[in-house]
Length: 175
Length: 244
Image (tube, rainbow over all chains, first blue to last red):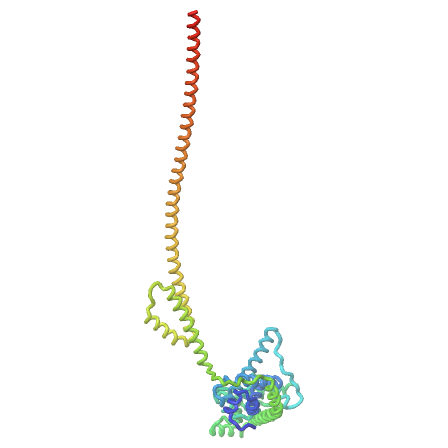
């Protein structure tokens, strides 16, 4: 693990140092991936978009004014790419008159049930839920990353937990 | 499962999330001690939360491999250029807008100087430029500057158009006068020339007449002479005969 600060790694990356940027990838990729997963609710899509976000970060790193802000900056890139992909798909489906593709309910294991139920949530509720539970971030950290208030995060988490429980309960009651 | 008390549901979720203060938490615990459905709901969402954490761990187990793939993909990407460039997006945008506004104003001033009917008011011009540059930080001012340039162009074009019409009318008038004068002079010259030709013809006719009269007189004179001669000869002959 590179011990240098984000600011130092960003400065080195601006000089074309791929090793330095690899250090930034190692430090922030996990969060970037989870943000993509939180929006897209699909691991493969999230992997693709997270990779695109990290590459765009490398290509545009000279636009970053403060190296210490790299984490929030690249997460914002990832979130925008994910939301754009989601909207593009919905727009295409609407234009073509195709019903939105619902994630197939696997019904194999508890985790698959849960993953399916999480995918049924709106993305703006799913994203804080994934950051809070999957990444173990506290509410304050989630609020900073999403640039909303802590009370806003609590409200979204509360709604997400209730809706998720309702989905799982209804699905469990279904014969 | 049985539903929890509707008015406690949010509080139970907040309790699980740790969002309640001590007093609220104590009040809920007292309720939970008496309400089995709410206890059951709390246990269920706690189980759900643990499952979410497990799912996150399961998905997160592939993070290292994903990172490696990203780093491999980065090797094929052109690196950021080595030249460190100070990038100030906001000021860069403002600078571009200001430069564009100055260029537009400069073009407007240049056109205005070319076409303005009176000397440019330098103080007014400087005030205009300063205010326009300051205001150019907002895009709306750029549109205003363009509108001003358009107005100046239209004014200049209308003034030039009026002047051009006046010049054209004056030129046409002068050309018509000149043409009329030339036509009159040409007519007089033509009349004079034709009159001369007529005089020449008359003179020629008179000369011919005189020659013919003279010739006729000569013939008359000749014939008269011959007759007198013949008469004289005959008279002489008659006289001679008489004498004989």
